[in-house]
Image 1 (cartoon, rainbow, N blue to C red):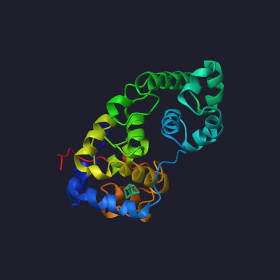
Image 2: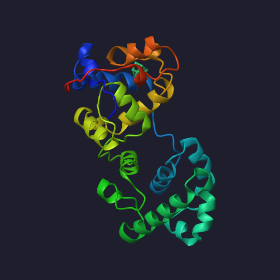
Image 3: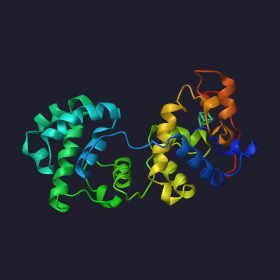
Image 4: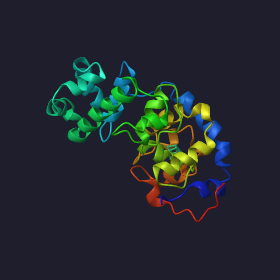
Length: 245
Ligand code: SF4
């Protein structure tokens, strides 16, 4: 289990996470008004493919690959009309190309057979598509305007822990903790806000606490600030056992 800043927030008198979440969302929304998904797509199917390709690589890299891919493959049928080896070559640059090809072809087959070629909105339906795990399903559902969970990627996990919003390390448990405190209306944008804050300010190794709009709400802020650049706060800080706020 990750070191917990939940108790640290109480010791520092920052208030309960349930009370801090409102200002956290508000300030991040002001700070990162442009925070949206970085993947480029023009249709529901392109969204699904992009998110599936984004595993273990950057959104920039996916966009580079899909710029050509989506000119060649326009409908779900197109991904099944070529030999698997050809699609593997076309997605090669995103890494794990064999597994991704298998997943994409499987998902397109199920889309055609069970969903009339359309990307479903319900999380349970999305999870029936081969190669679509909870994170992918959450991203797709949220982008289609039907958020039914909260996306937890590496940034969301790190910031949720540093902000003392969870004491868990497992993405499913972190999502459950966040669902309890983040207003449902914010489920879609909250991950984008944390992701962009993580990229711009709260870097894994060099968090810029002195520039952070959340510093007075963050239980790891001063620890990070006083530990010097290049130091991971989790390595410096040993919060004592804490009760859940
Ligand atoms: S205060 Fe520092 S550790 Fe806390 S969210 Fe901001 S940058 Fe991250």
